[in-house]
Image (cartoon, rainbow, N blue to C red; front, side, top):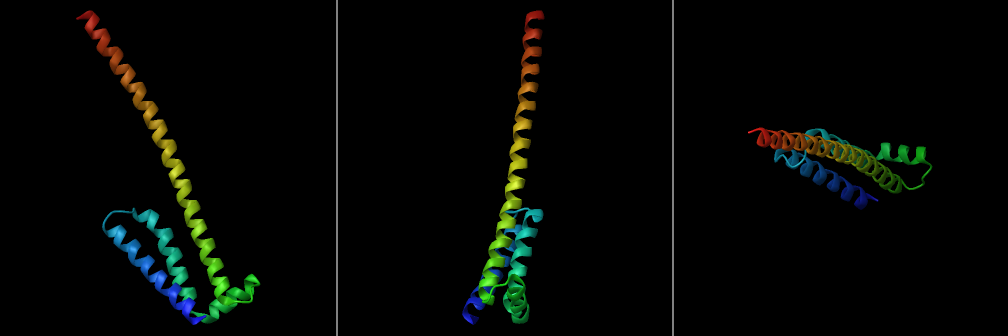
Length: 120
């Protein structure tokens, strides 16, 4: 059990470092990094505090604390991925609306240009 907890602690530290490095390099926006940092910090805290892990396993009705931790980690990352999917969907809708507005503007410009050529 201790080996798994040490591995998950290392994973949490690596994830925190990657997120902070990505924010610093502007590869990820700060508002999107918050959910990743929250999940990684939760993983770090729960993997280091054995009594919290045992209590969590008891609350979840799982006999093995490491299994409860892995279940929690899976749920946290599913929530993060769902949040990012919602953000991506909103961005896609915004891009479609912007492309449609641009097409309308181009149509009006082309109409004005053709009208100026026929009068000029």
